[in-house]
Amino acid sequence: MKKLLGILVLGLLFFSPANVKAGSIGSGEIKLKPQAVNSFIRYIKMKDKPGLFLIPIDGSSAYSWKCPKNVQCVAGGYTQELAYCERYFKKDCKVFAKGRTIKWSNGINKGKKESKFNSKMTDAEIKAKLTELGFLGETTSTTTKVEKKVEKKEATQTDSNNNITQQLKDLNELYKSGALTKEEFDKAKKKLLN
Image (cartoon, rainbow, N blue to C red; front, side, top):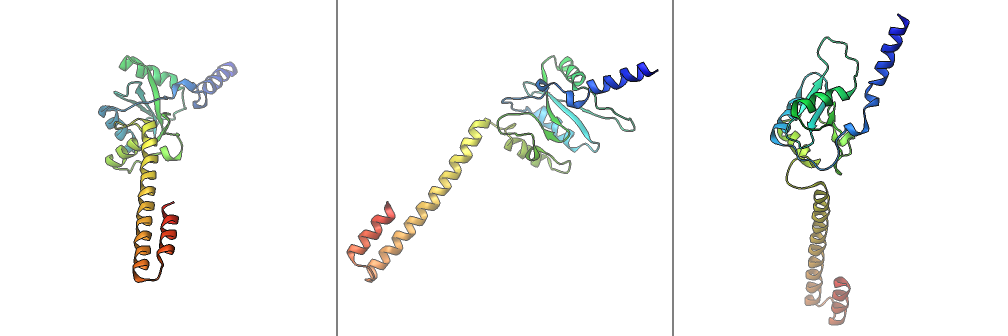
C-alpha cells in the first residue's frame, strides 16, 4: 500500500503544471483564424474556470480543456492535452493560454497582467485586445511597435509645429504693433526657427 501511495505521489509531482515542457508554450508570429478566435471567445466567457487553451501552430483552430464540475481535478501534465490536440488536428499544437491569460510569446505579448482577459468582456473587447497583443489583424508584432512609435513622434511634431506657428504669429503681431524693432523681430524669429 505504501509503495502504491509513493508511486501515486511521485506521478502527481512529475505531471504537475510546474513541469510543463518549456516548448509546450507557443512562441513566434501567429495570426488566429476566425474559428480559433470564436473558440477563444467561448473559452474566455465560460462560467467555470478555464484551464488550458491550445492551438495548432497555424492558428486555424483550437482545443480547450477545463476541469469538469464536481470532480476533484489534480493538475495534470499538459503533454496529454497537447497529444489530444495534435491527434485531433493532425498538426503540432502549442499552449496559447492558461486560465484567462495568453502565454504565447510573439514579441508584443508578455504573458503577464496586460495579457489577462475577463469573462465579462464583450466579443468586440476580446477581439480588440487580441489585435492589440498582435494575434489578430494584418500587422506583425514588430510593425505594430514601429507604427505606434511613428504615430507618437508625428503627433509630437505636429504639436511642436503648431506651437512654433502660433509663436511666429504672435511675434509678427508684436512687430506690426510697434512693440518690437525690426532687429528684435529678426533675432526672435531666428531663435524660434532654430
